Length: 295
Image (tube, rainbow, N blue to C red; front, top):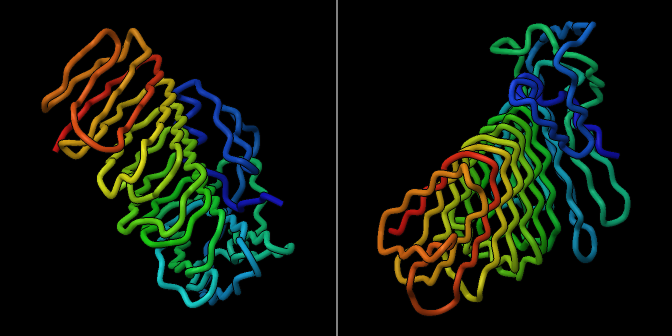
């Protein structure tokens, strides 16, 4: 069911260099050396209008986007509305329904090797809007640049799986429902996750092979928040509002921790005093940098 079209091509190279293994669900990461090379030829630009009605009850929505540019926000009149623009016929969006389970993904390319010609000549851009219906959302993003604003969307759970992606994700408004979990898995990615307190999640989990991550915990914190971060290597910036109690525990001898603001160090933990609901973060990493910022 999970066949997302163009695989994360950049991820193949990046992760091979890192000597890490990472798999986006439904996407196969290729070996470092491949015997065959596929040729992908661009054609004329095409557009497809996307209009997916909401099912009864809570929708299980999965969006798979292999490569290109993805814009996703709220304000839609259905479960998903929008326009997909592309110049490779095999990237025509595919929609699959099975009761409350809906899959929207890039087309039926079954890539067995790194394609020739993927660059400025090949275009794939989606501009999508999500509606107000309650949903469990799963995003699977390959070698893409994505701008995502999930503010105000009724999310019950959220999974983000990314390859060598460049992702800006914002919860600009508070989630009207309680989110059971927010899980992020990434390869060698660059991510900015903004206003995470507005996600209204019971817990947040970030697991990454490497890359650069910027996690901003601004927003409305209504209850204690548990966060787990597991990384092979990379750099993480954690941003907290002043006056919110925070405890960050770090497990990793080769992790360089820096901080600005009124932080106290107790053993392997870093504490910020405050009142109200607290944020508890556990960081496990083999190497890299961790920067704690109060603002």
